[in-house]
Image (cartoon, rainbow, N blue to C red; front, side):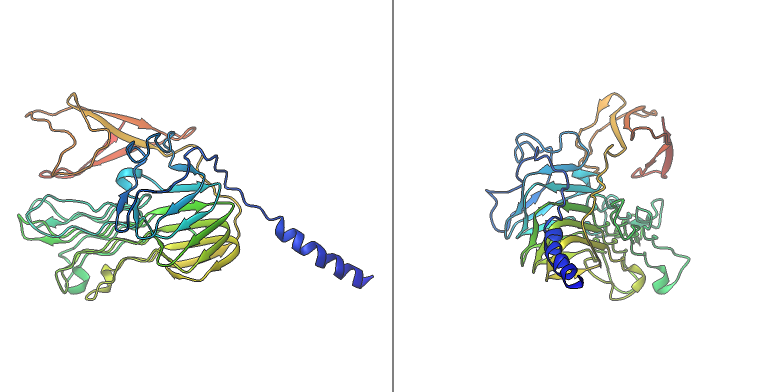
Length: 379
């Protein structure tokens, strides 16, 4: 009887393994994500509203959940995911295989150099947080990095290495649910009127899920690294951005490429400026990846994508003093999104979208170029 039971289990075990099926729920409405005309060396800024690149548009409901058929990043091509184009965390769902032969880049941007320039804030990967702005010894102090673990700005009350800006970190659990990117590094200071160097931005947060195979083939890579600091030597640097989050779900994950969520470098002078490493979660029935991983690697089996169903809350400035704002703003002082020339207070119109069934109070932080920062409630 015992031998018969062993033989029965031996027969059932392969059948049970074969029956394991993971379906992330892509409906294929965004088609195949491929770049058939891309050439080696091309850098492509992924923008779902770019009708030249995507004539029919992508993610038409603007929830940052993409329903692809297949995904292919060609060899030698870098596809860049940025928060100023995508906003929050990105969810790439596929019906078929995902092949990464090039670079899927959700890194945070590096901090700006010091100089006679406007205060700027490094752009993070989607779902990450902006780097702190550099400041001066006059009316524009440097700012801390944005995000829950944003790095502190330069502080003159501390001496030596203690005075340098701090690196950003990451606040996300080991399941990467919810999906959150890295926080920004703090900004540094310079003698007025020169602005100090800015902090690096946080790495982004991206989920890729398929019922098939995710293949990351060398030299292909997926990255959500924290942005670089800008250093001018010992005790004279801004902070690195914190690494982001990458969550991969598939029947099989394979290849010998790279998956990276570490900051892009380390501070050779002061360790306080270093950013924290991000997290990577591989969820697959067949774990066959033999490449390079930087950051905390968390293995598991695919269960649920936990893709948000209500979309993100959104605050958009529609107009200022009756002047319409560019619907795709850049946030740049060099090329303003709206110009108003008047000597009296100007009213602005904002449009908000909240998650369903939630009540919340929203504040907006104003970061004027030449005046003190202000925090305003939004109704």
